[in-house]
Length: 251
Image (cartoon, rainbow, N blue to C red; front, side, top):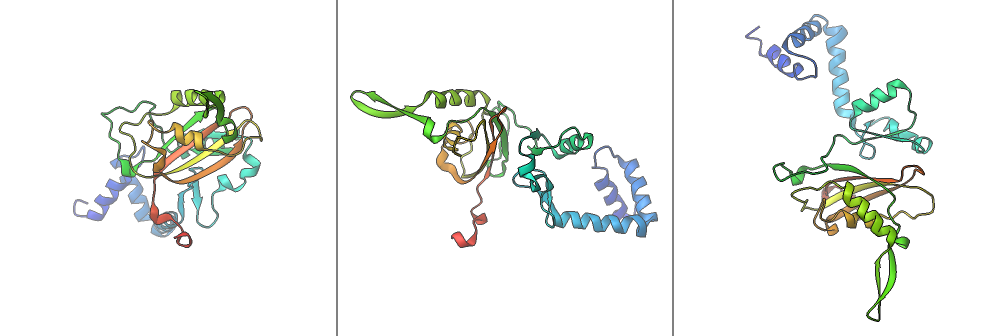
């Protein structure tokens, strides 16, 4: 077997699967070789189809198919009253198997420290920052109030806006260094009532000094309105802005 480089390569690849070592990999390979028509060929076909058709949903983070789309987002209007935020897809599957939750999933795809330090590398051009901020942001109509200062009327942040800023600052991750390139941002804002208009401006302002240097770096925004009376919050995701992704009809 020392001369069979194909087998050695297979052992290396299969050994990388969780819970599998070289011995387990050898047993799997022998099973594939001894059952080419029944196991090996269907496995190859299934893997090729998955490679071509399966990808992550850009909205919820779950898996979607080119043919059938994202099952998690398919009936979003029916599931919106409940949302379960999990770290990864394996967590989603585990909860689904229990059948104790029948609602909408949002998959973060990992975790992010609330206090990154200078010793941690942050690759600016290849980042995917995701986190959640509890609380309802003040809408544009409630963000400012007019006060008279030295015989001049000037707008300042309202009490509600200042309260949200304080809560935001306590929860927001601190990146070091800050992102300096242009970014694309996705925000899902859950309000406690149906009254507020969808407005992300206060959130973009709060991200300055924590995630990026200036909100002028935001070159693409995708903002969603949601309702959760018991748990208003904002789910925020930032990725590098890709100008090549702009539809040709807008250029």
